Image 1: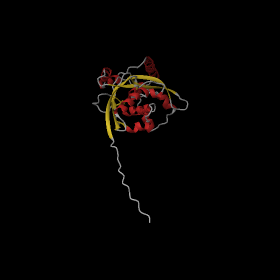
Image 2 (image 1 turned 30 degrees about the vertical axis):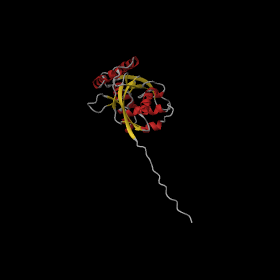
Image 3 (image 1 turned 180 degrees about the vertical axis):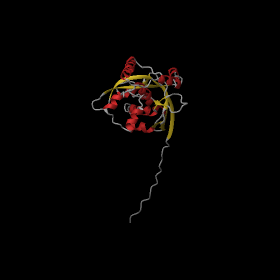
Image 4 (image 1 turned 45 degrees about the horizontal axis):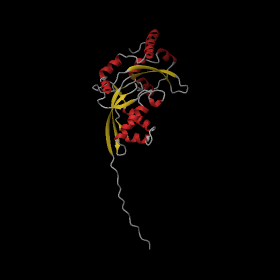
Amino acid sequence: MATKAKAVETEISVTEVLEGEMTFCILGTSPFICNRMSQKAWHELLAPQKKTAADKAANMKHEPLREFRDSPYRMAAADAPTVLAVLPSMFKQAMGTAALRIPGVRKTEILQLVNVQWDNMPVYGLPRVFMAITRSADMNKTPDVRTRALLPEWACRLTVRYTKPIIREQAVANLLASAGRISGVGDWRQEKGSGSYGAFKLVSADDKDFLRVLKLGREAQQEALDNPVAHNDETDEMLAWYDVEVKRRGFKVAA
C-alpha cells in the first residue's frame, strides 16, 4: 500500500533591499550644448500645419536669438539659484552608455538600479550663442543651421539614489566618473563620436574651479540671455550677416 509523502517545509530568505543616496559635484571639462526642443517645434508636432510657398516667403526660416533662448531647459521657480537647468536623466543615460564599455556591468541593470530625480536641476555657467551646420534626419541628410546656447564652463550638483546591496557606493561613483569621459551630456557629446562636448568630471565640494563656476548663477545667466554674446568668430559673423539680411528683406525678429 502506497504511503503519502510528507511535505517538506522550506524556509524562504529574502535579502533586504535598501536605497542609498549620494550627491556629486560635477564640473564640465568641455562646453555643454543645450538641446531642449523649441516651443515652435513642440507646436508643429502637436498641431502640424502645412506651409504654402507664400507662408515660407513671408517668414524667415530661422530666428537665431529666439532659438538661442529656447534651447536651454529652465528652472520654473522664481527663487531658483539659476535660470538654466539640465535634466538629471541625462546623467543616468550617460551612466547606462558607460556601462556598455565597462566589463562586468550591464546597461539594463544600471538603468534599473540607479535613480535620479525627475525635475530639472540647476546648472551654473554663462550661456553663449553657438551656431553650427547640422544634418537633418531625412534620407538626404539635408544640411541646416542650428542655433543653441552653449556653456563654455558649467557645473551642477547631482543626487543619485541606488539599490543596496546589489550596487555599492564606489561602483556608482566609478560609473558616473566614467560616464563623464565616455558619454558626456547635451548635444554633440562624446558618445556621438563626431563631437567631444558635454564631458565632465567629479570634484570635491571645495574645488576652486567648481566654486568659481557656482558664482555664475541666476543674475549672471539672465544678463547673458538678455544681451547675447557669440561663442566664436563664426557665430559672430553669421549673426551680423543675418541682422543685415532680415532688415534688407523687411522682416522683424527678436532683439
